[in-house]
Amino acid sequence: AQSVTQLGSHVSVSEGALVLLRCNYSSSVPPYLFWYVQYPNQGLQLLLKYTSAATLVKGINGFEAEFKKSETSFHLTKPSAHMSDAAEYFCAVSVPPGGDYKLSFGAGTTVTVRA
Amino acid sequence: DADVTQTPRNRITKTGKRIMLECSQTKGHDRMYWYRQDPGLGLRLIYYSFDVKDINKGEISDGYSVSRQAQAKFSLSLESAIPNQTALYFCATSDSLGVNGGYFGPGTRLTVL
Image (cartoon, rainbow over all chains, first blue to last red; front, side, top):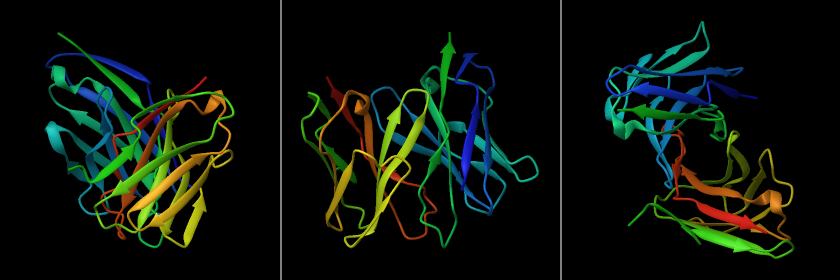
């Protein structure tokens, strides 16, 4: 079975500073990996995904993530935080083709952006 | 119109009551899922369905049941609600390749008193 660990339940950054959210996964087969964002009182929006193509993936709103198989990691970064990035972020893993695509989520990281 | 809709959006009920949460989708996807979100726990899978005749339990199915009335509709029921079922519930769909993760509805906030 696959699982996800997000390091740090809360991250506070200054506006303009680097945002780094950590995600490590475990899976017996090469996984699909996703980052979702949840703004207050809203549903989940897909930020970016890794599905076995390029290991560095770019998403919406200036976010990117790098799949590192040797480290079983899929950390999310954004070079310069904006106030609008304040939200909760979830890393998720699913089993690739042949599987049932159910997502296993991390516990989430809440990002606060200081002016 | 939203691709995945959920009704109701908010519900307050009492312990022991039967509750049904409904989900409809216009994505044309066969796969549908119900997740539950609790603070500090992320989202956990309750049930999922590959078609109207294929229903599967997720990791936390106890106390819940589902019905897949049509390709586009997937309902979650709490037969006898209890306070620890207070949570945010999400419905999601997925295409057959799964390369886009899930398409999520806006969520239903359920409070059981």
